[in-house]
Figure 1 (cartoon, rainbow, N blue to C red):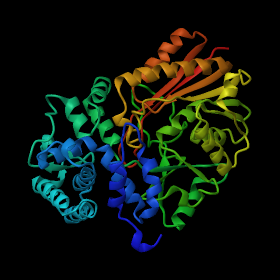
Figure 2 (cartoon, rainbow, N blue to C red):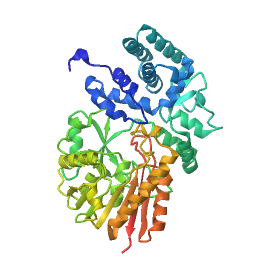
Figure 3 (tube, rainbow, N blue to C red):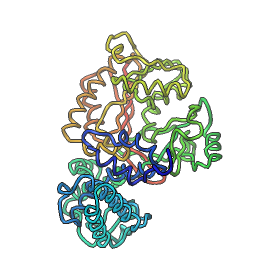
Length: 480
């Protein structure tokens, strides 16, 4: 594209957010076609996702200092304002003058002088009321401070948030733009300190992790290739993932010393995945640390017949093939035919011979199985992956959690009918709600006497050098 026609990251972000409805749309689908119009792809992505993650808190700031409810602000101007507030509050390294200046220019190009004057007035007012763009949380007034990291936040001279001592759920919900009923459930389940950690992790910029394909390369060799291409990368060790202590897993990677490599690499800084060295050759798969846990718990072996029941897009299917050294008989299916095509793309890229993709209808015909092992990575409420699936916080409801738990139990029944005596099922979700996890498994086992719970693990979303999402996994064994 010619240089003169390229757009700024802020302009791209405003275009996405103006047409974005979190109840119906996926931000990534709207953003992806527009990224070719900018040289600031990573920044545009951060502006879109960061603004959506923090939208409720941003709306409070806009309403407070514009003197009107956000519902009364023109939608296009509101998108421009929200992006600018996101940068002022959550990107303190970006100079305030450049944020305000470009927001005003963007408004002027699209709406004229009067509207750009309104944007300028609101942002100047907000800027005047910020006392510290990077305040120490240990010293800050929590009602006046929007949290950026575990240690810092943007402090205002005006109360914006509920009193954390009087109503912790309301305070955390608004501060982190999360439904207060959800935060309330976490407070009951995990306590105040752990819930605050979860909220922080739900609003983090998630790290990019590569799971090395051991059949084609080694961690060391891939690290060399990445560093030769000036990509900052570091190996992840086996103590990187924090388990929730009340739901232990015997070993979340392997029985290993804490500093043993795991075959996972963390990429530091912005990078386009498909442009990384080794992507086209199938040397790695992108996978969060928490998402690798279920297959490790399943522990697939060469020679086994294995079913991946909800396989799309195939990340865990590929992990099964890797762990079984491409010497198992793996059947992958999914109810969504379009997403099943992505499994085929991954099989081709990584070069596995052990994976057979079958339409879901074939599973219903009863011609498949029994299997030695089944992975059931069930559809869920996504409460463990709110940092990545930025729309989910606007869609999750208590009723939706109840409804999806019924679907999960139906899938468990299907898996139970397909596993051989002595075989195993790994049930997993990317939710951290007890209703979808521990309770669902125990209710199912109470009605299916032929299965027993062998192990389970709950990982909560975490910040830190090796940040990760949340997930749950339970290993069930069919009695011989």
